[in-house]
Length: 266
Image 1 (tube, rainbow, N blue to C red):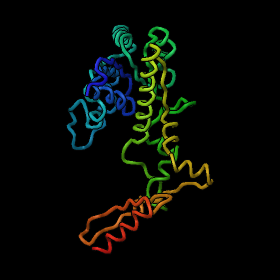
Image 2 (cartoon, rainbow, N blue to C red; image 1 turned 180 degrees about the horizontal axis):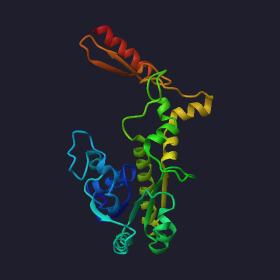
Image 3 (cartoon, rainbow, N blue to C red; image 1 turned 60 degrees about the horizontal axis):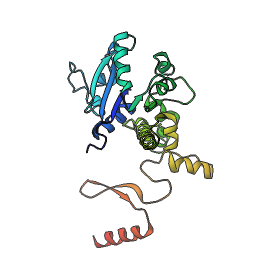
Image 4 (cartoon, rainbow, N blue to C red; image 1 turned 90 degrees about the vertical axis):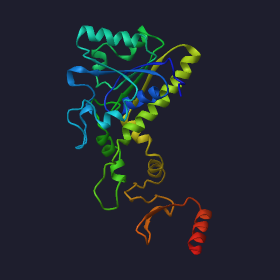
């Protein structure tokens, strides 16, 4: 599906959230140029390898998960010639995706106000870790600080990190939504804009019903294994006589009565 054929995207982002947004557009036909820092060996996840992966390979399975169908350029923005190449790519782009550390965008002359004054139709999509802090953020830190780890696992166990970088993926999805809205706005006005998302706000907003339960009842959500906080049987796991596990996801009383009838028949 080439719905974004002709859309030009420059990705100045590492690890998962930003590259996931870039690949979303690449999968839908956009021309995505990913700029990696040649002085540090490129995207960090090139080296995040499983023990079974080839050590001499320049990429990893982790890297491949969010970097399909992109043109890769290794540049050092501190070098004048490389910087000129990056600026040339940005000057003709429709969308720029970044996850600069605090202050780096301004240091390289790539702050949103500067870029939008030069290229008024550009959409600048920026990912940060926290709204008002300069700390570098990794997904695991956000899982811990926003409560996801305390909700994950079984009652009485230590907080548990989820086995995928869920906060990064949530931020990526929310940034995509912002970019799509910005593209619709640009189609009407011809003007670009800055779209931002922080891992912290993405995580907090994604607590959904768990956060609402606290706000409405002042009850602190706790780890409950795979059980649902308000309905049952939803999430319960039962081992069958043949050793296989079955998960129940019953959302209404009518569904429960039908389940009981099935059990009676067997």
